Length: 516
Image (cartoon, rainbow, N blue to C red; front, side, top):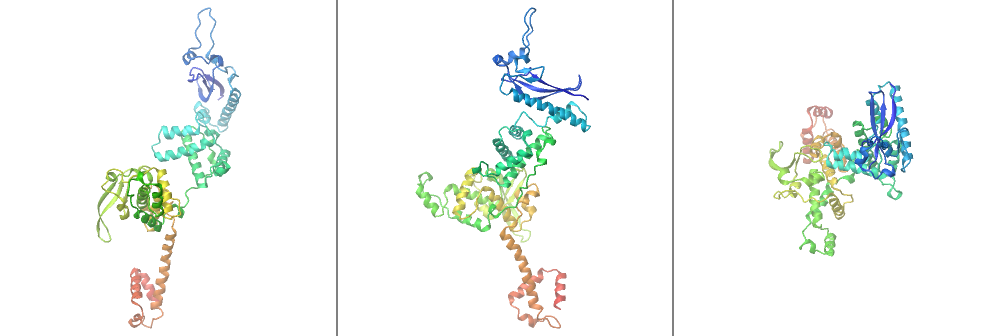
């Protein structure tokens, strides 16, 4: 079916500044028409800019017989209705006409492409292909509308804030950039800009940060595709491959048990100033710091930081933790020892980020940090920025050569769990993760765990060697007699009995066969 295109000015819907929007009109037949906004406007001619919106909307005014006809609305604008192009009278007329020429070519190519692929040409199929992006908005405006204004319930407030920060960073690099302007070349340029040092005019970001930024941009473009505001054919991430970001943690991302002990010792040394804080001089604060004594703010920060190390709460969850609402207790019986203990635990029905129920039994160290009589917030949690500033100074005082941030506490809890043998699926529940893929971030082995695991091999060799040394060299025709076992020390004998008691019957039989 033949299709013709015209550019028309919607003068019946003037904008607040009096300008009118250009539309592309598709005509296939007298009954088969469609119009699509190009989100470009044409201003009034300079001599008509004094007209109000109401006056513009009244044109053309019907004339009485004998009166000269008034102007039509189109003639009020810098617009040639016959040619469907802008006329001179404003600075960007030439660039606007170039844009219209390009859009006409694009529209014609879409019709040709649909015909070539033997796809039906209808106003719907054409507009779907022509509307490759929401060209009225920048990428930042588009994301703000769909993530912030029309709040996505599946995303937490922190996630949306993080997403918008990344899109805002892109918008700073290229203000007002639209999705149709993002292609393979641009993505490479932007990645190089982030990679460059600050001295070179870049951001000085690492590869992991760059990949995370690209993933969010990709997420935004996929959102537009799902909303039918962007064509998959123009999707730049088909060619630009984003690197993996789920790398293993390093030893700088969490605290080893001995480092936690250093922080506990620092906490135990604290004592409050003998006079009100505002009366303590700078010299007195410096003297306390020299002695390794925290100031009150650092002391409060360290308390809830260590609590998070013991239970794995995120900063926001720690901020919202309420003694009456979230700290519960009950009698629990150990299935092995049959011992009954009154145990405290965290019971949060809806985590702020995942919306999932979280139950974390508290170890004794965590319970000791709680004031169960306090009403309301469990800890006086400061802002994230202030917390991390305190942690930086705390690490220096504790002589821990790591960059501490509050999230280190969560990593510390996770790695401690796995170091001491808590199964991955249990750790997943304790951390409140929905998917197992997230738990893989934490299941790396610490250096201590490597030694601990290799100790099992060491014990295996030693136990086997002991068996052979005790019985094999001393075997007689009838096996090992009691006289020969007299030479074995009581310690070795007990260990031998312990080793044999842990073996199954098949292995004991195999050893008996070897030693005769």
